[in-house]
Picture 1: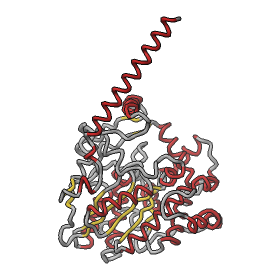
Picture 2 (picture 1 turned 180 degrees about the vertical axis):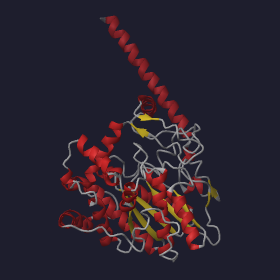
Picture 3 (picture 1 turned 90 degrees about the vertical axis):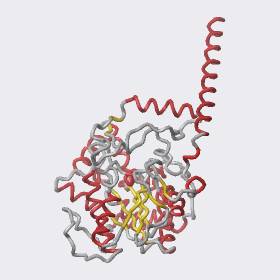
Picture 4 (picture 1 turned 120 degrees about the vertical axis):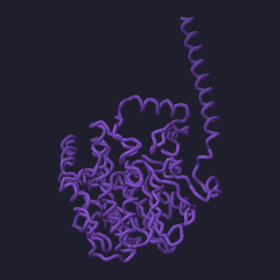
Length: 422
C-alpha cells in the first residue's frame, strides 16, 4: 500500500510538473504573438491593412478611400465571413452589381467573423470604423443564434475582436498552417490546446474535399455530422417559439442596444442597412420538418417570422429610419425554384445562396443609395425582385403584437445604454 501511494504521488507530481511546464511554454509562445491583436496600436501604422493575413475573408485594403469611390464596411458573424471565398461571397457580388448599376466604384469590405453577436458587431465597428475611411455600414444579423448567443451565455459580452479565426492555426483562404494562438476556454491555456486536438481528431466535423485554392469555397466550409447539424437547428428553433421569449430577454436587450448604436451611426452621417438573415429551417421546409420530427417539437408553436418581427419593431421604436432587409423571402423563393441556398449540413449559405443575397443586396444598394432605375432587371436572378425600395415590412399578428407589447417594449423603455440588464 505504501509503494502504491508513493507511486501515485510521484505520478501526480510528474503530471503537475508537466502541466506547469506546458502552461509556461504556452504563455511564452503567446507572448510573442500579441502583435496579432486588432487595435489601432498594432494597425494604425500601416497605410494598407492585409486583412487576409489576419484571416479575414477579404483582400488587402488601403485605409484611405480611393478618390471617387464609395466604401462600405460590412460586419456580421460567420454568415458575413462566409464559407465562400472573395470575391464570390455576397459582399463582393453586391459591390460589383451596385458598381455596375450605379456607374460608380463601390467597395464592400468584409469584416465578418465567426461566433459573434450584437455586442461584438458594435465593438468591431468602433475599431475598424476608425481604421478605415468609409461612407456606409452593413450589419448582418443572423436570426439563427444572435439572440441565443447572448441570452444563453454562449458568448462573452466582452469577447475580443475576431478571437477565433485570428488565432486559428490555419489560413482559411489557402489552407496553409499559421502559427497563432487558440481561443481561451479553460483556466489553463494548455488545456485549450488539448481540447482543440480532441476536436480535430474526434470526427465531429468532416473535411470537405471541394474546398481548396480554386473554386468558390474556402477552408471554413465543413459538413457537420447529421445529428450535430440537426441538434444545432433544433436549438435555434427557440428563436421562433413564443414560449421561449422570457428566456431570450438578454438577447433582446442586446438587440435594443444595437439598434440604438446603429441610429447613432446614422446621426454621424453614415448610411446604414441591416440584414436579417434566416437560418436553414426558415428557408427549407424539408429541413424544418426533419428537425421538428426528430426532436418531437410542436410545429404549431413555431412562428418562423417571430424574431424578425420583434427586431423590426425594436428598430421602429429605437432606430426608426434604419432600413432592414429581411432575406427569408428571397432565399425561400430561391429554394422553391430548386436552388440549394445552404451548403448541405454546413448550415451556412452555399455559393448559390451567396449569389442570391449578393444580387438582392446589390440591387437594393443601387436603387436606394445610388438612384439606379428601379425597373432595371437585367441582372436579376429568380426571386431577386422582392421589395427593394425601402424596408421590407413583416406583417404583425395578434400574438406577435401581444408579445412585443408585453415582453419587448418594456425592455425598450428600461434597457441600459450598454451591457446586460441586472
